[in-house]
Length: 472
Image (spheres, rainbow, N blue to C red):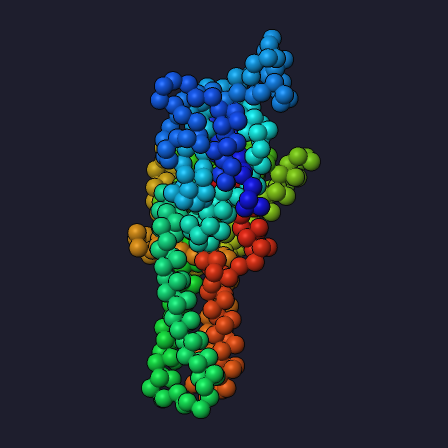
């Protein structure tokens, strides 16, 4: 399939000022020239244009090619003009895919972009699969697999911290450490296999000590990388926080305050929220998915029954609970029931309505933090954000942390690599046969190679790149 020339719309669908159709492959210039008509003395065809130049003209469709636009063209003797465009010509290998690439910039909107894409496809290109441009960049050696995944992370970043971490991985900071680890494992395996090939030559004790020390260093690096997994996954997918509590405690008002806009309907009538509302907010650089739930109480009708059922489901799935209580009301048995529900969970008790006379006195609760706020005035909201950040992310956030934050796939591979390397180290120290040590070293080496794509399967690549959008 690398012989095909692929094309796709590389910009989001919908109305906009501009849209970009991207082509990549050996026939990209030839295909574009079938439908591109340069205009002006300085514009050239794609095949004759210098690399990395921009050319003005029209995309046209020949009368032989079917098009709904021809219904509005009274003449079938001349090509139909599809759109006025700019064509960027980029010759490989100085491109994202290391292949010849053409990017056609046309007017934005669903119809212009689709009409240009259809014309390019009719001229001989194939519609790209999800992530196929990035997959080609990987297969052609421009980026490794960890960097390819970082492309998706950059696109899906929801906070500046997540974007910083993705850019560090895209720049190859994680890959540098993984490649150094892989080189050390490879050198150790080479020494062991040399002894297997020449069994009459005994390995000197100091040489064995050096091999063991190198393995220990590699295992320590794996453990260091594994410790970044939780933070890395937190930045990528965020954390779910359920806002729960009795009716009319101010849950929807709290959601609006945390988002900085009116997202949920707020009313003095208890039970206004009948369904769960999910919105993502940037809390001190961490994406937090807040789930506003219906007030947990005895339901009065079928709709409220379903809303309360969904509230319980959201509470069960949440990684953090914000229990909102009314500071102007006395503590009730229902409040005690709420407290018992969240005990043992990551939870913050939010005492709302502190602008009113205080009547709520909470019993002593271990390991549950209490933050006083007023959703009417906004008092205490910043402190609440700090408390949320401190609960889900321990310590300071520094730029150096972002260089090597691994994802769940890296984590699984490195766990296997660490276990195999530990077995090899044990075998080396226990004077096991070098054939057994070599087997463990190969297992560790292959697992480490999976992180950057030095050892992959087609199923693994399909799984990774299928999560990309078409056109990337």
